[in-house]
Image (cartoon, rainbow, N blue to C red; front, side):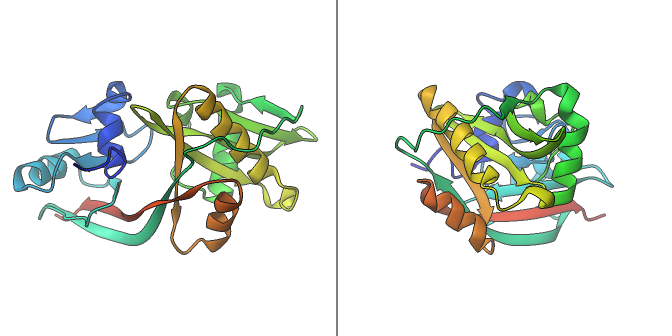
Length: 226
């Protein structure tokens, strides 16, 4: 039996985050205003055809899964990359810092600006719909943030971890990663995350705080081929 995290997008959209989904039991995507991830139930022709119908001309979606990515004729890949999925199956170091505060929709524009600058992964103004985000502000500026994205039964994804270049070197990414991961664990869930396989610095950081490799992942950005 496949693990629920082998196709994390599909597992999230058919369970805990179904309310954010477009599509059907063959293929689903998050509503475009939230995040650009999509997935199929399987790689059978019918599911792939359904995926093709979910991606209109001019839009790009991202696929992320442990098995090889197969595309229908209607779609083409504009980027493909190897990634890793990491998981923390045990208690992590407890951290506390009075600077950590929950971010709200009032912070959304500054969060989007930080994500656009540092590129931790797809981020939109509606990302706060998926889970809590926490940050540290220094001199009134958002210096770093981290939050939650995809959710499956028993699991929540740590995502959006980034620090402004002006404040790097102060351990803020580590601090917020531990803080958010521990909140997930406190709910009785298991935190996990994704990183590009080429991002050795990020992988080293996550290993140092207690995450371990669960699986290699395939990532592809795809768009209409017509």
